[in-house]
Structure formats: structure tokens, C-alpha cells
Amino acid sequence: MKKIIVIPGDGIGKEITDSAVAVLKKVDEKFNIGLEFEYRDAGGASYDKYGEPLTAETLEACKAADAVLFGAVGGPKWDNIEVSKRPEKALFGLRKGLGLYGNLRPVKIYDALIDGSPLKPEIVAGSDILIVRELVGGIYFGERCESEFVDGVERAWDTEIYSVPEIERIVKLGFESAQKRRKKLTSVDKANVLASSRLWRRVVKEMAKNYPDVELNLMYVDNCAAQLAINPKQFDVIVTSNMFGDILSDEFAAIGGSLGLLPSASIGELTSFFESISGSAPDIAGKNIANPIGCILSAAMLLRFSLKEEKAAHAVEMAVDKTLADGFRTAEIYKDGLKKCSTTEMTQAIVDRI
Ligand code: NAD
Image (cartoon, rainbow, N blue to C red):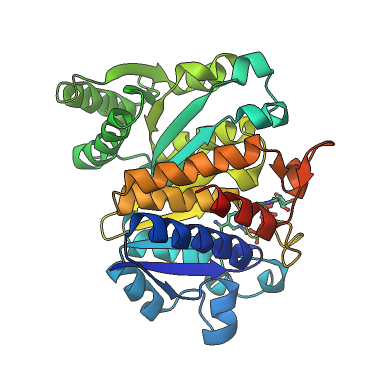
């Protein structure tokens, strides 16, 4: 059996993970994978029960599992509690505890939703990009100084450090992801200014010799941000550092339209972690109107990356494509003339198409 820990969390987390589990159960029936689900709390739900956003038992259960399917955490109910107990701390605890070193965010522009993108249809049509972001190193984790005085002038600083093994680990994920897609990798850095980027670039070039089937392109981050708006179709897989990935992945997400549509995977040393890129959406929680597609596509990534069930992953992605093409829309992407549906109706439509 393959053990999946399901962490609904807070807000719409329960609704969207229920949808993803319904889809996984259908896929299990069809492809005979042998899935087993175990539910755990995190975030506000865990704080309310145990006084902690993430318990040691939950972390241990995740470490021992084949994969973790996560909803979202946070909400106004917990906004004023002590910082160390805030729901979002559960995410940091899981990232650190599971050694989640690489974040994968695919952004695909569905023909059916093309007018939801802020870019012109002729520019954005057919874009299908995977961004691979380093998640546990670089400037977000380097030594820093909040305030010091030098010659009477206050200043602050951060440091970006990358070691060769850290770069190799994430770049390998980039090359391997490209091999499974259209075999094109763009490595994004700022090697014209930063020493850490020059090392990054040197390692990437060296590693490229082991992946002759992948076309490599080296790009500065400022150019990449511009190219995304000018010609997003040129990209297949992008690999980059923690901070550049943080910024670029949000820019990429914006061209996709709704937050509720986009999945993500965080690849770990012990296990991997799958979640929609949106938060807990407290404004719509409990109303059965959240878009479950981001979480359902995260489940497809779980099948692909953790369970190596490529056919099953593809079946889920095709069912989502077909459901959108057939006109089903949750409230936030609804347009006149289409089929307005609830979370559960959208889920059923997808399940029926697997
Ligand atoms: P959010 O992503 O929850 O919501 C932003 C907007 O997008 C809202 O209007 C919401 O209704 C809409 N939206 C989000 N997901 C949707 C979906 N599936 N279907 C339809 N509409 C959807 O961001 P926020 O409002 O800034 O944050 C709310 C809470 O979520 C906060 O407590 C924040 O800390 C937390 N948060 C959690 C995560 C996580 O668990 N990974 C990530 C980001 C924010």
C-alpha cells in the first residue's frame, strides 16, 4: 500500500482536499495503485486541539509516508495569537522537517480560460511552464543583520550563500523535469553581478554535459521577468534560486488567472508535499464554492512525482482539461453561458471524466 497523509488544515483546506481525495480514490480504482489515506491536523486546526500548529507526531507521520497532500492553513481566528503558534508556522516546520528542497510550480494556460489571463490571448495561448525553485538555501536562510551602526550610519544586511551540492541537487531536479517534458531548461540567475550566481551558472554548465537531450538556456533574472510578459511560450522548465524563484513564480502564477487553479509540489529528502498555491481563503470557506482544481492537480503531481504513476497523473490532468472544455466553472472563473458549479459539482464532473 502507498500511504498518503492528508492534512486539510483550515478554511477551504477541508473542501479542496476532500475533492482531491475523491479524485485519487477514483484513480486508485481504475489503475489499482493501492492507496491508503491517513488524516492529520496542522495550522489553526492543530492549534485548537493541541496548542501547537504542528505536532511532533504529525511530522513523524509525514516523514514515514509516501506523500503528503496539504490543504491550506491560517485565518482571522488565529491572527492575534503568539507568533510562534501561528498556523503558518506549520508550513515552515514541515518544509524544514521533511527537507523540502525543491518547489515545483507548473503554470498551464487552458484554452478554455484564456480570457482570464491579464496577457493578450495571442501572447499567452499555449504557454505551459514549470518553475523549479530552490527552497531551503540562498538569501532567505543566510546570515543577516537587522541593524548595525557604522560611522554613525544605520544599516542592515543579508547574505546569499550557495554550495555546489545545494546547486547540484536543485539543478538535477530541473534537468530531470525537463527530460519528462519538452526537454528545454532555462537556468535563471544574476551572474553579471552576483558571485553566488556565477557559481550557479558554472555548475549548471558542467551538469549540462550529463543531459545532452536537454536544450539549456542561461538567462538573467531581469530578462526572464520581461520575457515572461513578452513571450511566455518560449519557456518549458525554469530552474532558479530561492529568492528569484519566489518572485518569478508569483509573476508566472498571475498570468494563469485564478489562484485556485494552480498546483505545486515540494520535493523532499524524506517525502514530498503537494498543495494548491492558494491560501485558506477564509472569505469563501465552508460555502462549497472554492475551486478544487489546484488541489486536484496537486494530487496529479503526487501521483507523478511520489508514486511514479505517470498514466494515472495524466488521466487526472486530462479529466481537468475536459471538464473545463465542457464549460464547468466555479464562481470565481464563471462567465455567462457556462455551467456554474459548486466545489462538489466540479469535483464530480472531474471524477466522471477519469
Ligand atoms: P488566499 O490565497 O487564501 O486568497 C486570496 C483570494 O483568492 C481570496 O479572495 C480567495 O477567496 C481567493 N481564492 C483562493 N483560493 C481560491 C480557490 N481555491 N477558489 C476560489 N477562490 C480562491 O490568500 P489570503 O487571503 O492572502 O490569505 C488567507 C489566509 O491563508 C491567511 O491566513 C494566509 O496566511 C494563509 N495562507 C496560507 C497559505 C498556505 O497554507 N500554503 C498560503 C498563502 C496564504
